[in-house]
Image: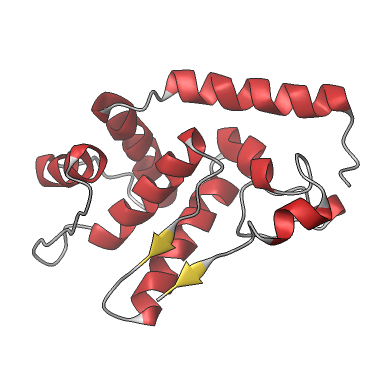
Length: 161
């Protein structure tokens, strides 16, 4: 069971709700989130270009089944990681399955998700509670902070294909 007090758990959910309000589940919210991620994680602090913004918009608002094809250098791997992190920010109960042409590429994308949560300070609320056995992959709201060990076992499913 989590070692966090009820008050600490409530503060964590309040912090998460504040982040969700700061970056709403809209195209503008995603693009703002992506710009911060790119500025914080990529040397040289580049800006999101129009092609990348279109790709992210499609990822968020496209049909049920989506596939992104773009020329080399459009940061598709990075954008997929940013989109997965944004989705987990709004739907922390979701499981994300990443499919790519190789397992190596899928692992790179999942690595971007983890990097985003670990290296952007205000996303600390999403990190696992390591004192209660949380892994480095599953965001904090899905670790022992909110659930017992038995409840979380089926949620710690991180798949890269």
